[in-house]
Image 1 (cartoon, one colour):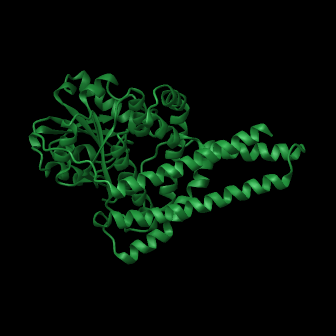
Image 2 (cartoon, rainbow, N blue to C red; image 1 turned 45 degrees about the horizontal axis):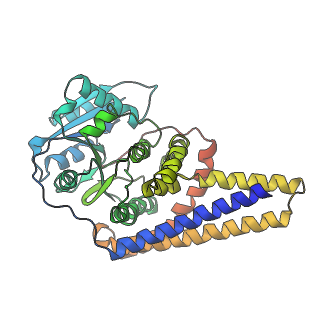
Image 3 (cartoon, one colour; image 1 turned 45 degrees about the vertical axis):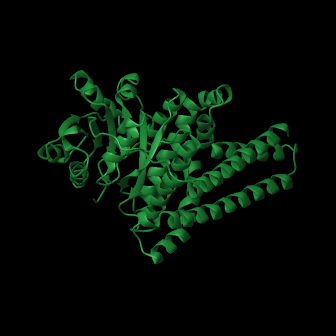
Length: 407
């Protein structure tokens, strides 16, 4: 009985605190001016790191965007690791005047291993120290012309790690791509933007981020190889006392999955990655939150909390206790009904948040009003599918698999 009560209280507190925090972030973002960085000289040298696997159809778009920046092109070097490619990605990039390192390893698979290989090559060749900082992009990305100029302002204001505004090139393809795109736009506007206003650390996304040479040296290149290497990098940085910054004026456009099967596979990997990161970093984050009273550690402890695992454990224990007569079946049915009501309430709240995201970021979203209305109605389906995905992630052996991009 005591154990069930403790689990009920933990689930309630974590859920309630999470909802209250989300609400506070929305209010802060809506009624406060976003952080703006002062003008800075465009004199820093940057390396762009790209991991690509069979991306010959889209990589030229990203390289073209980088060459077309308002930041001096002679201060930006592009380094691509052609990771287990079987197409002409490497040659396409060489023909565009960029540096290419080819990697062939079918045992250690994933973006984290590819970035490690690339940075190790640059360190061994004595080239890594030539740069003040390093940007990480995915091959399907596109950039606003002022992206590097804006990130340079934030970097020269003192941040050693930065992430940017993540938009989408194909939000209006269908309800799947719109669900994913709205998720990232919401995170940029209502989470990372608010974290900057709160003075806490932001969450580095899987693409569109940068880190300084000092961070690279501390990590001896790139040491993050879990399924969500970006989240792992964020947690490691927070535990080192770094404040990850956010530059909302640096806009990146990402290509989202357009089929539900692709989206499911991608989010399954993310959900499994969250569990991995909590396993390795959760206890240290909780200790830092308590000992250092670090709000960023509290924030990311809530983010990583394995709510689905706790929920499954609570249901199984409730069924077991009811079977042995320690509690009544009616009490457990009542608990399940309460959780179901909570899920429905959360879905409605997320639909409202999707609508609010569209209203607040209307200028950044390229879709008609009719399409946007349809995507708001479909957003709960996208969010609700996280429930079985999170459940599957507990038992699955999700692996990194490439997603085909159309460019």
